Length: 345
Image (cartoon, rainbow, N blue to C red; front, side):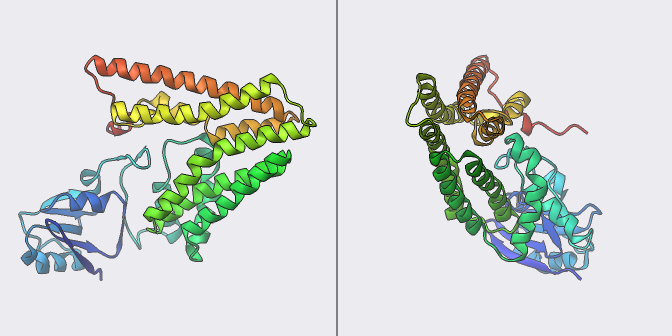
C-alpha cells in the first residue's frame, strides 16, 4: 500500500505518494498551482496541492489506496504532461516529464530513465554522443557506494592541474589523457547530483567555476609545451594562435552573455541550427578533439593553430547569429527557443 507524505506549501498543503518517482519539474510545477490533483498514466491519484488543509484526510486516504472516490470534486485533475512543460530550461532539453511507479519496471530501467532525464540536451558532441553509456555506469557506481558529487568534482580538479602540468612540459599525450578524464568526470558529477538529489549551491559554484576558468590555462600550457619542445624557439603564427585562442575563448563567453542579456535565452537554444552548432563550436571538448587528432598525427603545433582558426570561425558564426536575432527582435518578433515549442506527435 502506498503512503502519502505531506509538506506545507506557501499556498496550502502538498500530498505526495511515496511509491512514485517524479521528474524534477513536476513537484515545483505542482507547488505553483494549488487546487490540483496529479494523476498517473492509469488515472490513479499520485499527488495533490490542497487549498484547504481540512481536505488532507480524504485526499491522503485516496492517495494511499490509489482510488479517487474520496477526492474532492473541486480539485482539478491533470497528468504529468499537462502539469509541467516539456521544456527544461536548466538542462536545455525538451522531453515529456516522467512519472514512474517504483515497481513498474526493473530498477536499472528506472535508473537509466532518471539518468537520461538529468542529461543536457544541447551540448558538445562528445558529451552528447560519446559519454552517455560510460557516464551512466560510473554515475550508478558512485550513487551505489555513496560517492558525493563534490568528491567527483574534486578529482576532476586534480586532473585539471595534472593536464596543465603535462601540457606545460610538452607531454601532450599524457596530458590529453588527464584532460579527457576531467571532461568525463565533469559529465558525471552533474548527473550524480541531479539523480541523487544532492545538488548544493557550493557544488554548483565549485563545478561551474572550474569549467569556466581552466580552458585558457590549458591553452597557455599547450603553447608553452610547444615552446619547450622547440628548444625555446617560437614563431609569429604560434604567438598569434595563442592570442586568438585565449581572447576568442573570453569573447565567446561574452557573446553568450550578451545574447542572454538582449533576448532572455541562451544563444545555443534559439533555433535548431544554434543547438547543432553548439555540438562543434570552439569550446573545450571540440577543441580537445582537434588537439587529440593532431597529437595522433604527430602535429601538436598544427593542431593548436587549427584550434585558433576554428575559434575565429565560431566567433564569426555567433556574431552573425547575434545580429540576426537583434534584427528579428527589431521586426517585432522577439527570439524564443525552439525547445519551448510543443513536441509534434
